[in-house]
Image 1 (spheres, one colour):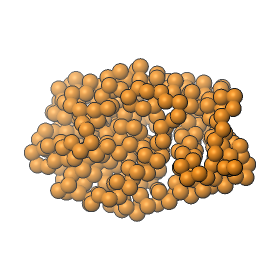
Image 2 (cartoon, helix red, strand yellow):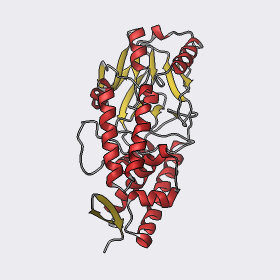
Image 3 (spheres, one colour):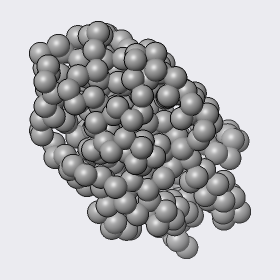
Image 4 (tube, one colour):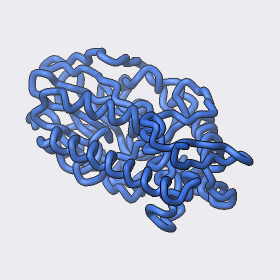
Length: 325
């Protein structure tokens, strides 16, 4: 890692553990991602900045890689204290500005998706209640500078190109320093855990009956990153790493194996709802994991539908999958 890019680990209340914030000690002084909205996170960030001779008030630009609360929670607090600009994907800015309302709409979307794919109503309601309690870790953000795919962020001593890489979230954006080969990747690719390609409500606020094909988009994003010439990938969690192409190959192969496993399960036991499939694959997971496993199944079902390996049928408001006739 170049000496002017510093990793600052910030604690989160979530199972994923610390989130990585990156201080770019250049002109303008830039922070990538902020940690969740908590006193513990703010203290850790302040201490991390101090370790490099900086204060919150010195920040001139804040860049957000995506919409998840462990990455955006402190953004407005830091911007208010420092006067820093806030840069992120243009499509994400309205969502961040109306954070509370957008999170509520996301919850409605998720509950509807769960019910349509066989999740028992009491489980869906309980999960929505749990999710609503974590909203306080995030906060509304006033974005000052809008990024499009391919835009360049200039520094005195470097420049980054922004690349939209949807999959883990609709807003995932990575930042490539072509001169050094560094890629600040957010949660697009993490070495020690697989980034969940979670099904999310579209950023444009639409509520299509058919869910977004998140995994298909994520695999396309991974292939685009594999085609880049990088020296190091700086992730949103865990340590930086260099073997990004091998890791991408492994992740794509993992998803292919999982899709084939689901195809075989549906052929033998179908018709099955996505929730039925998740139960057969992972058993009774923690309530907080129910939506993640449902998203995982539906992503692989999308692959299989494209290939003609499964068929779907909706009866009484629940979609089930079986082998094609």
